[in-house]
Amino acid sequence: MRKGVSTASDASRPTGSCVGRMFDRIAPTYDLLNRLLSFGRDLSWRRKAARCIEDSRLVRVADLATGTADLPIVLLRERPHIVDAVGLDCSEAMLWIGREKIHRCGLSDRVKLVRGDATSTSFPGESFDAVTMAFGIRNTPDARATLDEIHRLLRPGGTAVILEFSLPGNPVVRWGYLAYLRFVVPLIGAVVSGDRRAYRYLNQSIEAFHSPSAFCAMMEQAGFRDVSATPLTGGVASIYKGSKASSEV
Image (tube, rainbow, N blue to C red):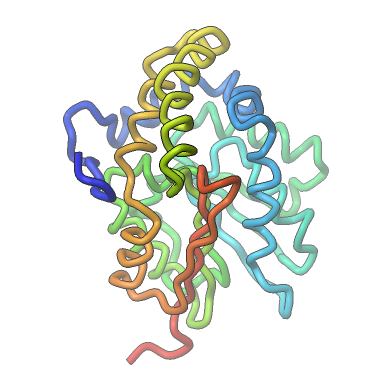
């Protein structure tokens, strides 16, 4: 496997409806395992991603691959200027849990969750001021097509914020992290969720995904400006940010 090269076309990688079914299976334990496997860091990562959206004006946000709606909830708590948010995911079981969480948080009037494909949504073009995505773009069949869709959805001057797992640059930290991904994550995932295959896929998809520099280059190829990558917790995750030009040439 070449460093920084996605293997999204590999036969071993779930695609399309297969990904949706996989997340349907693990939905009941998804949030718990997120906290356990990240040692609770995933919550702070989402808060940092939310803070990347400037609060200079009222905005409308779309969160793709929203899962159980953790990021929309954090967005509305961290950024009161957000008028409303819509979350989209291919797993109905995840969305059901997300709707329950949104209701408990008293945010039902500000967040709507819908089922759909992040690579090809039904939303009108240029209809959002910000588009976010947390730990989802590596699960799509085509990361570049997903970036093209995000770019289409953004209004001129809008912001894309993508939170995704990455591999640390430090060789020692990288070695330890890979050992954790390959041996510990599938074991804990199997014990808690009963689905070892899903958490084996997790480590494989992280290792196969683009390096931060390669992903930034892909964002630029999709038309984003001012692209940046911010490593989190030693580089085990990264926040990617880019903007759509105020006026397209």
